[in-house]
Image (cartoon, rainbow, N blue to C red; front, side, top):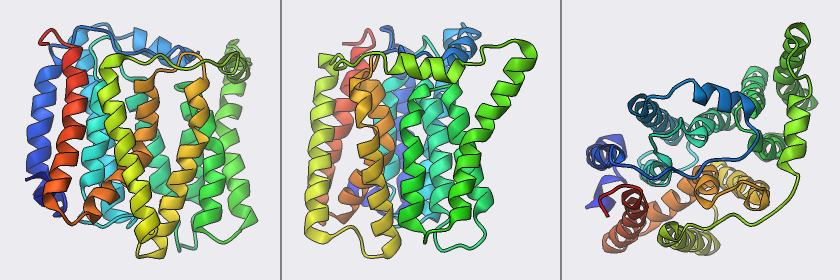
Length: 328
């Protein structure tokens, strides 16, 4: 069933992905309850999102963002060798996590943010064992920094670039200078424009102060609890699998998994930032979890066990989606 499809690459998995996607696409038109909204002070995002009011267009844009994210995950799987090229479980895991944020109320900030993060990750992983990579590093950092004006929470990923380069490449001071330049350029451009056109010159700094204004635990929606438990169990199983078999059979896979673990650690503070919700946080975690859990599923030899784990995982996600509709 699923196990036999997603370990055979794009051709094997595309049919099942299309069937599941069409089911989710149909369900999304019945969504009535508002999704968990971010209370982060993302003024630019709030302005852009407010310009589109049609529920149908909003839903189509969110689906487009989801497909773009899936395409980038598939691109990383196929080209970057951080998991087996035939392993399309990361695409399925990413899809299963991200469908929960689909809504007709607003363009999803987190689907948009994940696209930028995935592009930056692709550029960073693509620097492995290459000589001329300064432009790739600059592009990754530039877009990640520009994303602050859409989702200020991306500030937690700034240290990740330094850590990832230290893991993937030998030390080169020019590359670290390029990281700083990539981060600074969007802020500098904004500051120049804000000075010329009388915008708020302290946008980033005021938003950071508001972001860290106080800490609290996010509110847990009980409809989300089954999925949270299923994801936590799969993550624990992936840790056990790594402890038993190691980080991977190639150096790049080992380094990539180390990067993903650092990614998971760096965004832990998001659990305590005001305005966070477990669904929103899980979307930011969906990128490293997709590859770690996907690698676990690919490494298991029992097809029946893989199918059981996937069915529990997918059904718990669909349960949350259905609960947002009038169908249940």
